[in-house]
Image 1: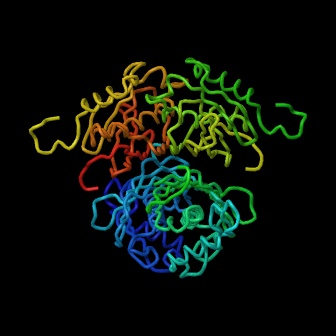
Image 2: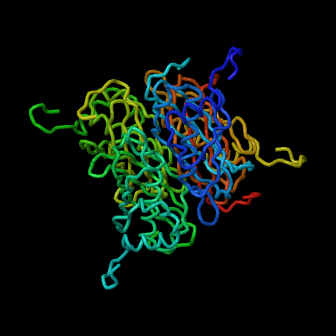
Amino acid sequence: MSTDTPLPKHLSASAVTELIDEAFPQIHAAGRVMEIEQIGPDSARVRMRLNDRNTRPGGTISGPAMFTLADFSIYAALIGRLGAPAIPSVTSNLNITFLMRPPPRDVIAETRLVRVGRRLAYADVALYSDGGSDIIAHATGTYALVAPVKFDGV
Amino acid sequence: MSTDTPLPKHLSASAVTELIDEAFPQIHAAGRVMEIEQIGPDSARVRMRLNDRNTRPGGTISGPAMFTLADFSIYAALIGRLGAPAIPSVTSNLNITFLMRPPPRDVIAETRLVRVGRRLAYADVALYSDGGSDIIAHATGTYALVAPVKFDGV
Amino acid sequence: MSTDTPLPKHLSASAVTELIDEAFPQIHAAGRVMEIEQIGPDSARVRMRLNDRNTRPGGTISGPAMFTLADFSIYAALIGRLGAPAIPSVTSNLNITFLMRPPPRDVIAETRLVRVGRRLAYADVALYSDGGSDIIAHATGTYALVAPVKFDGV
Amino acid sequence: MSTDTPLPKHLSASAVTELIDEAFPQIHAAGRVMEIEQIGPDSARVRMRLNDRNTRPGGTISGPAMFTLADFSIYAALIGRLGAPAIPSVTSNLNITFLMRPPPRDVIAETRLVRVGRRLAYADVALYSDGGSDIIAHATGTYALVAPVKFDGV
């Protein structure tokens, strides 16, 4: 994150990655599957690398793996927006609809924070196959912001 | 399943387990975590054993692990009701709400098939901590019944 | 609610009806469509009377009318459980799945409060056609308990 | 809809309005509350006019009214995309999250068709207060496309 610009309203992807790695070192015990590619003021893009555990016979991606990606990408977006105070946030609801059977490729989550309130945040997530333009699954999620967080305007 | 009683309208827990083991042998690659304890005509009870992968620091159960359990328990209930033709069914939607932070214990899913149509099935799932009476998470799910399945009355 | 019996943990259906009538007199401007039939410690049964506004051509019940019923029945259950302090509660999320096309009859909502926390309550609702045993629609809802409410054990 | 351009992939707002008026004349019995303002190839913008029935004491918009708007706007988008064959479509699921208490103004629904399959369509809807830029409620919906519809690529 550049320090000489006036509006660094969010952390960078690498800063979010560091915060999560520090808080949850065991998350990568089996290898680094989730990669935070981009963080915006109210968005995140996260890649889930194809691996043995998230594929299913016939060559598709498991539903629970896509859930995990959607959930993680909202978490990353929240930390990008709110910083370390968002670390203790927990998922309150996640609703995921599977729209297409994805091919065995990396999956990309594009998350948008729709609303970040004092206690709750709400986001939507579109999942794509790497290189594809169709949405293969769509999720919405509500997070409980456990620690009191300061943010503007809500 | 007894063959001389008039109303064996569903498979037994062990018959469902066998069908799933046969179709997805890799599901237990890392040990048998999910155990189908009971199948009824429109219900299933599944236990998720506590293990390293589904716990989180601070001693709680991960959200994705609870999603996986809810999803699996609906699948088990569908196979119990419809038999092998339900094997290729896929999750179309799953909506899960986390109500309490569960302690580090086995989690029990109680699934009820609310509606089994020709193409879609809908179920709800209550998750409990082993030995507890509070619902720690609640889910509803819709499955697409891929293969044409015969069943009565719908 | 009597104060000398040990277990009157909830208001009666008529007490809930009175509280709602008082707070929202305009709700019955077009006639009394919703009738609270029964309140339990964590449940409510509400009847939506068939009328011109909630039916659709071809003789079925409109989706928005069923949403309204599900939403109202959770509200009634909350007031039954928490009394007048629940009056300012507002719906935070409602997820409804329509399972069958209902015939043109009264619709009955059976609501169960799954969890009542300090700030949020979560319930599920099964909708039936009057006299039928099939669930025609199923909903889950989260309410924000606006006023600080006292209740035991959460 | 212009007939001499090569890509009229959707109906106009007025064509959709006509089709709905014809199929459901009673929808405007109490006055024209819903106004389809814009239809795109996979989108719709619908305005719900403020009126006595959709406001609540304290000057806010009722939840069921916002549900009705979200539901209607998906329906309008589907007819825009698929034409008259979409008329018999029915809502299968609608999940709505209320994010802010809206002021007593018209509400605008911006609907996007995320996926239109052979039998099911899935959309998301953002609701705004007229003139405001905050999303006051967000919904996702699944519709069952009752009549067999022809469309390309799915």
